[in-house]
Image (cartoon, rainbow, N blue to C red; front, side):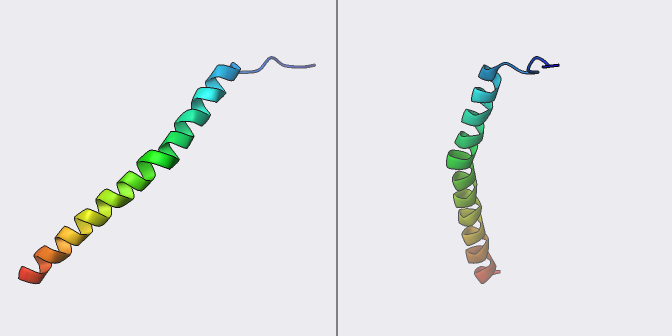
Length: 48
């Protein structure tokens, strides 16, 4: 009994492209933006 695959291979390809894109682009970008926000908050805290 060999069941048919639930999703076509194109779905897995799109999934992996999206996952790699998320790890390569969005995670570093979010870390950069959060760090920049943290530095701005620290500089505001010095004057408060």
